[in-house]
Amino acid sequence: MAIWQDLVDGHGFGEKYASVKRFVRKLRGSSTPEARVVIETAPGEEAQVDYGTGPMVRDAQTGKYRRTRLFVLTLGYSRKAVRLLVFRSSARVWAELHEKAFRRLGGVTRVVVLDNLREGVLTPDIYEPALNPLYRDVLQHYGATALPCRVQDPDRKGKVESGVGHAKKTPLKGQRFESLEDAQAYLDRWEAHWADTRIHGTTKRQVAAMFAEERPTLLPLPVEPFRYYQYGERAVHLDGCVEVEAAYYGAPPGWIGRRVQVQWNDAVVRLLNPITGQLLREHLRQERGRHRIHDEDRPRRTPLSTQQLLHRAGKAGKHIGQLCQAMHAKHGELAVRRILGTLALAKKYGIASTDDACALALETSTREYHFVRRYLEHNPQLPLSLRQVDPLIRQLTLYRDLIESKTRQEDQS
Image 1 (cartoon, rainbow, N blue to C red):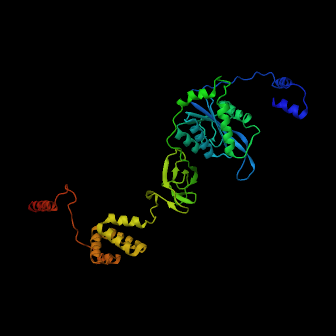
Image 2: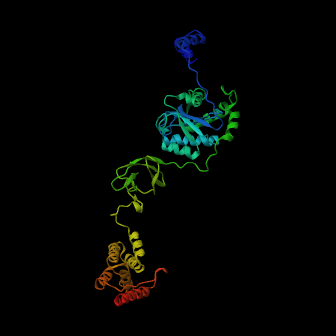
Image 3: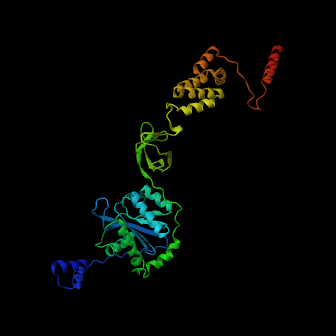
């Protein structure tokens, strides 16, 4: 019909439309066309998604008309469709369009059939295609499974192909809109007044009536929408960290020089094993230039922070911890080396001797590292105070009496 109209308008063609039909029929040849399989799906089982070209819409930023993209999701059973318009596409936009379509329908199908476009499929493969991680996680959040078509096999999603063509030829052909909102409102009115009330050519039933049957079979929507994130791959540098937006996050030991998958949003950064998808580490977001490393991932030679040193001193001994706290309160960061020196004295002279020396320093109000060091240097062997730390340990006098009795028996023999 379009060819006949162009011939009449542009070339003064005077024959009827039937003449063009007979001519085109000859061009098809005598080969017998291959039969196409009609794919029937149960209610709530399958949805098909695809992109098409949308109308021209004025861009508010540039003031010029731009060609939009038409997103279409069509239910396999009822042929109910959701059509949405956007200026540009990305992995996140593609996933957000699915989310909007699910919420318009009031439920989710169990399978989503799609083409091998980059927003949904990273690596097409007949048996094991690699899905876009963000798209996969969004569908998993809603309880759906992505089923990419085989390469160069568009007939598998012929229902959505028809839905795209129906919108391009009927409400949007030759249209121009001043804003994306106006275009979407016009498309929604057409959808409700014409597309939903039509009698479908294959099912011979009204689309709205069939959707009323299918809607109760859809999976329920989750309580919360999906929390979107960005993703990518990063190399683990020599400091054991990966860089994400100019901040640094620690990876587990053994990953230096290897690549990990990274997911991040405004709150957290996650490091994942690129092969298994296992979560390696999760960090809170940091400002630019800052580091975030778990304590167990720090290199052995990494200097401890002041709070870590004070915590270690408190665990070493009661009076050791009190003296170190007092030195830090008096000298601030200058006391860090003195705290390190006090811990070194505990290692050299023993915790009990050093704790007693620190107690003496607190009693005399000296509260300095050099007092504890000189005291231990002049009194290297302080008397040990033995304590009964467990009821299963016998009294020391019993061991003494046993040793003396054994010694007498040996002397007598």
